[in-house]
Length: 416
Image (cartoon, rainbow, N blue to C red):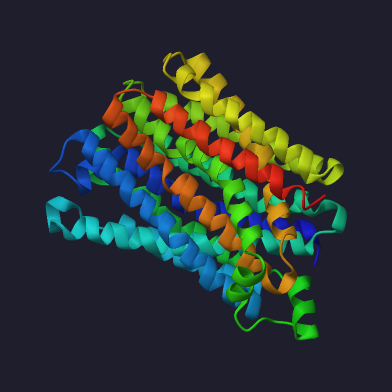
């Protein structure tokens, strides 16, 4: 099967799954506080909403381990179908949830449960989508084709931004809180069906087929990974913390901060984030092609150094409340996020042999996601609530991006 067709199918399916994931973060920033945690202050409600947001990250390694096991034992393709169904059903379920005013404490309990299921779905998604794209690709274009599922992240964010922008532009605040917030979740059903049709038409990974032919499948792939490749897992998780933390501040927390604290217009921020997301999307394949040409080491190190600088200057520029400076901050951050995010998929897949690759790559990625994006919005909200300043948030982001820079420096010594 042609690599471009498989990569495109990976992009479409991943964009749908990440749309599902991101609309939760946007709803948490705008609506979930008053709807599901009404008995506390506005700041505490936002903190509680972002805490439920983080629950999805705790579930991601579960999805990565379970689907990684079967992806290395049964095949990549079947796990992609299961992950998409899992995410889609949970997302539609959130759109149907009663609020606290209707069922009391059961509302946040059900919200957390469905968020956990979302996390399982997206936790199993990444490894399968990336490996299908990378393992179908020719040797000299692994990073480029592997970047297609990576483009699904900003792709999903762009769709989510457009949907929320359309709703908040055309609905009053009362109407949005009454029913408008449900629309993005319920609309997911249509996209999931389209994604399933596309994913069912692609063929299994040739690398997995070779493993089956050679009968080298591992009985417990995750045990082999932890016994023989724990250093690779630790370094890949550390390498991912920085980009993931900056990414989720960019994608989730800034909407809450700029509207609730700086009192900026919500639609204005959504438009600026949309423009930056388009740049992020465009940079990913370009940086990945450079990675194929010049090696992972140079591209990932440059991108990681850039992320450290972004961590220092992002909030000071946001705090000016000047649209041009906010856009500049978001654009520069998007460029360096694209440089790192584009080629990291191929890097992770190259760290593990084919019979344990789904389990190994997924575990490193999802552990990094917990320590990075899983904590970032909640930590940022807590730091601002405690200090009434964004300086501690900037220091926190600088620390995690420096950790990632160190891990990138070490792990790229092992690869070309």
